[in-house]
Length: 148
Image (cartoon, rainbow, N blue to C red; front, side, top):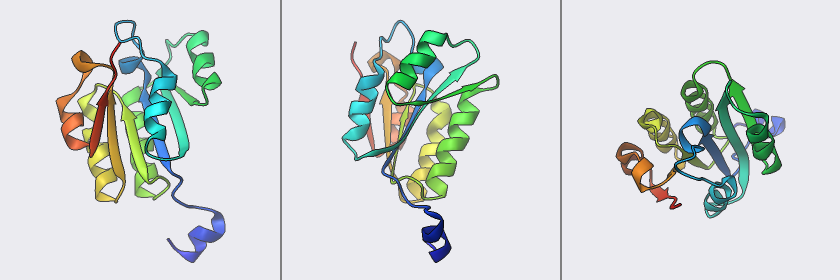
């Protein structure tokens, strides 16, 4: 890290937890946000916890995410694109040491690859065995599947 980076306060900040809400927080998976945080803390202190939701998210879901310490990011566009860009940026700018992505979507494989190339540990969390993406599991350094 450059001297300017240290002066501005830029630094790797532990674990970045990025949750793909529309693909993980589905009734059939019964995922608890606290379980996702618990897995992420196995890898260190959580420096960034973000829950990505689309415009159809209920106020109750938004409140639940905020109550559990997530920065809730709602977008009218594609949640996947916003999450992938944010996660890739955090890894590329060395703002995190470990990237944890909770999803069942293969679209996040490139974000995990870039993070690994930048020296980040990578972790994929699936909402359950039947919701697991083999591509994410095989790309990440480690993977977890939640069981309902």
